[in-house]
Amino acid sequence: MQTRFTAAQLAKPEMASSESEIRKCVHCGFCNATCPTYQLLGDELDGPRGRIYLMQDMLENQRVPSPEVVKHIDRCLSCLACKTTCPSSVNYMHLVDHARAYIEEHYRRPLIDRVLRAVLAFVLPHPKRFRMALGLARFGKPFAPLVNTMPGLKPVAAMLALAPNRLSPPLSPQASCAASSKGRVVLLQGCAEPVLAPQVRAAAVRLINRAGYDVDFASGEVCCGALVHHLGREDESLQAARRNVDVWTRQIEAGGLTAIIVTTSGCGTTIKDYGFMLRADPAYAEKAARVSALAKDVSEFLASIALPTGDGRGLTVAYHAACSLQHGQKITDAPKRLLIAAGYAVNTPAEAHLCCGSAGTYNILQPEIAAKLGIRKAANIERLAPDVIAAGNIGCAVQIGARSAIPVVHTVELLDWATGGPPPTALLSMQSRSPQ
Ligand code: SF4
Ligand code: SF4
Image 1 (tube, protein in one colour):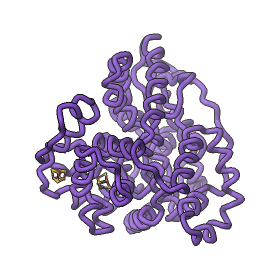
Image 2 (cartoon, helix red, strand yellow):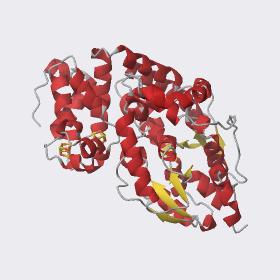
Image 3 (tube, protein in one colour):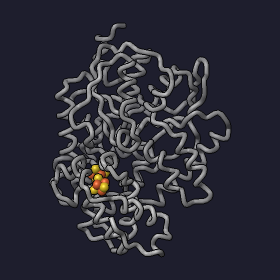
């Protein structure tokens, strides 16, 4: 694509990066075929190619974004299916991240939208605040259908509807050593996952220990910044990235850190991008690149080491590939291979490349599109009639779990169970099928 950015614009690293991605696009439109919003809405401006046009026009001409442009960019899930499909290797992620930050800086959203986004950014990245908010949401849950009819409050209704009926008690992160250590890893503590599903971290610790690695938790670590990053709040996401880079650099310099392990793939995609996000900061560029290189999704790490084999408990698993894992990190087969090696029968649903509609805060901010995608995903999975659904991202687990009666668990919970751990909480009723 031809561009006309000025030399002064290109002196800014974020503009230079976006210009180089826009130039790679050859308008072929292949990406539209795998874009969930294009598939649902059928509007060129709700597909990647159309959005690239909008972003080019906005950035190149330094326009104040119009409500129409913001609408089409906001409808993008950042699922990155287009990045996987694109034959010209357009890095759509960096482009849309820049566009979101530009919109945040140059566009004044309606009041309700501003308040909602500020509340999400204030609450979600902080486990204590999130837990408290979910506690309060329980009382509002019965009123979700009523709130849904009020102008501008559909996102609040979506939030209430998605809130779980009850929460497990919090589990404090505790370092844990392997019987015979081959190395040491740091496990990301996360923000939403430990509140919604604390059992995932516990299963990951047992599994990693069983594979022969000590597990540590880094004190001073904060949310990875993905949630605010996708809201366009660039300063907050960079602040979180710098803080974590400092914390993990101390861990690296203390010696012998094999990997930084992430159990929520949405976070992993962002941490693996810290090197890019902080590339123009001389004090952090090198350290951030080192941290990104050490970051590994838990399935990626486990697939690279020798895991004990398991008995699979006679179950059939439908594997749901989170977009952040399959498109963001290009990890496609590792989780399925691990589950098969652990003895499970594994099936993949139709349209596995399509997003379930969770996408960070998307299922709150764009509830109608998200609900359509969630229903479509759950239906495709249920057609397989599995005993259990495995996913590597808490957002997907909540989104699909709200639309299916089939239990949804994290891949590591199944691997842990098959190799000697306790059954996943969601599967306790199936224990009778266990050979033990
Ligand atoms: S990130 Fe997903 S929703 Fe956004 S343009 Fe690409 S394929 Fe479409
Ligand atoms: S597939 Fe790639 S090159 Fe083709 S229109 Fe989409 S972004 Fe552009």
